[in-house]
Image (tube, rainbow, N blue to C red; front, side, top):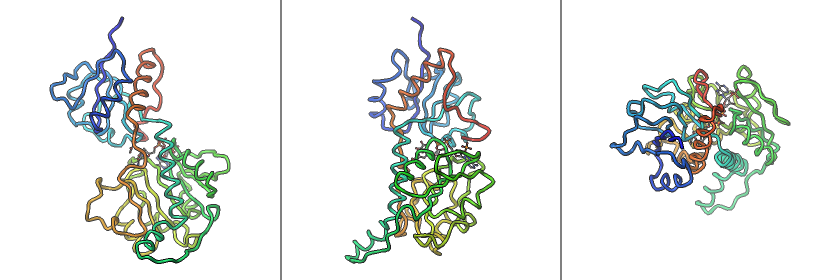
Length: 316
Ligand code: NDP
Ligand code: OXD
C-alpha cells in the first residue's frame, strides 16, 4: 500500500472539536498539528487552515494545495510568503443554509421592526408600529455567489422583491440582476441592502457614505437598511455610523467589522436600530470541512481537478 502524503492542520478552532472531527477524516494519512511547535511539517503536502500562524509556509515548504477553513480567502491572500499553489475555498451546504437563515432573519427583523419593539418592551410601552409586507420591500443582494444565490432564493420564498448585483451578470428566475457597471441603478431600487461580497481590492471600502446615499429613500420602511455578512473591510464604519445617526440609514444588521472583535468603544454597540452578531452568521462545521478536504485530496491524487479553486487575480 502506498503511503499517503501528510496533511497539516492550522485552524483557530477548539482542539477538542478538531480532534473529534479527525476521527472521521484522513484515514491512513498522517495528520500534523501546526500548533505543536515540535511537529516537523517539512513533508506535509496539504494544509487545512484558518488564520494560520505566519510561520506556516516556512515550516511546511512542500505544500501542494491549501484548503481554506472558510468560504472567504482574503486572510490567505494577504499572507507573506504565500506559495504559488492552488487555494480551495470551503463550499458546503450547511454553511450556505446557515448563512441564508441569518440573512432572512435580519431582513425579517427589520421588516417587522424587531429593534423598535425590543426597545418598547424594555420601556414597557404598548404601541403598534406600521406593518408593511415583505413584497412591499426590495432587498438588493450584493454578491451572487454560492451564499448570495441561496439567500436570494430564500428571501424570495419569504415574499420579498429581490434584486441582485455581481461582477458578471447572472440570470436568476424572477430576480432582476445587475452587473458591476449598473451599481447606481441597483442601489436606487434597494430598500434593504445585503452584503455578501468577498473582500478584494475592488470591494474594500465599497460600503461608504456615497453608496449609502444612493439607496432608495422613502420605501415601505421609510429609510433603507444595511445588512452585512461579507467582510468588515468592505464597510467604512465611520460613514456607516454617520449614516445611521443622520437617518440616511434607518437600521443595520452587522456580522462583520473593520476590526474584530468590534472594539468596546464602537458607537455601533449602543445604537438601538443596529443588530450585532460576532462574525457568527455562518461558522464552518469542522467535520464537513475535513470531509470535504479529504475527498478533494483523494480526487486530486487520482488526477482529477480540484473544485472551488480561488482565482488569485480576482481575489476570491
Ligand atoms: P463566491 O465567491 O461564491 O461569490 C462571490 C460573489 O461576489 C460573486 O457573485 C462575485 O461576482 C461577487 N463579486 C466579487 N467581487 C465583486 C466586485 N468587485 N463587484 C461585484 N461583485 C463582485 O463567495 P461566497 O458566496 O461563497 O462567499 C461570499 C463571502 O461571504 C466570502 O468571501 C466571505 O467573505 C463571506 N462569508 C462570511 C461568513 C460569515 O460568517 N460572516 C461565512 C462565510 C462567508 P461573480 O459572480 O461575477 O464572480
Ligand atoms: C468564512 C467566514 O469566510 O466564516 O467562511 O467568515
